[in-house]
Amino acid sequence: MSLTGIILAGGRSHRMGKDKGLIRYHGKTLIEQAIGTLAPWCSDLLISANNPVYEQFGLRVVPDSIRDIGPMGGILSGLEASPNNANLILACDIVAVPENLLQLLTKYARNHEAVIPLHPDGKAEPLCAWYHRNICNPMANEAKRGNYKLIDFLRQRDTVFLPLQTSLKDYHPQILRNLNRPEDFFLL
Image (cartoon, rainbow, N blue to C red; front, side):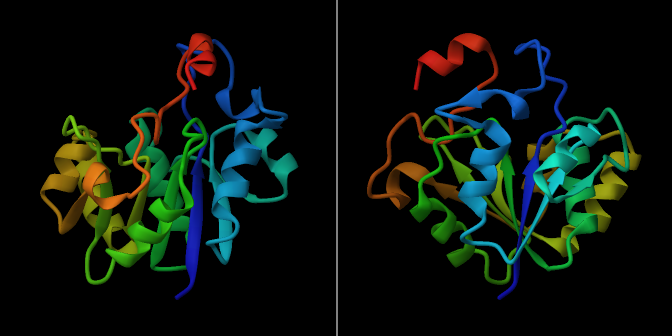
């Protein structure tokens, strides 16, 4: 099965104060780490971002087709640009992604529109997930109606919510932690 990796780097980074994808962490930028995470799994990679500076990484950079609607805009644009039906989405600021999670996401994807990890507290993580390209039109319609809450949309679709604690043998609470503020880099 051909699989596209879509790296989300289009956030405004208000809490960080600068473009998160270009911040160095453990010797690499966050965007380079996301590329390294997805490359072994994906036949195609692209970056969903509104900043052309990401072209320096040699991948196609796709701007939001609908601006200022948050993560839904980046996911929608990435899926629209994807050459494949199967897609792994990864926000560049999620650095603790175990390889077996990506394997689980693709395993549970059969005949569904999305597979979303679920933390023990019930919080879903739609920014490190699997999406089928056929979810584009319903997502675009939802966005055009002004409904940008991704989780609300996914709950109305054929979505598998995958509990991390029971699905991953090596589950740890730091899995899928977002780096949103400068102090978050010291918490991992």
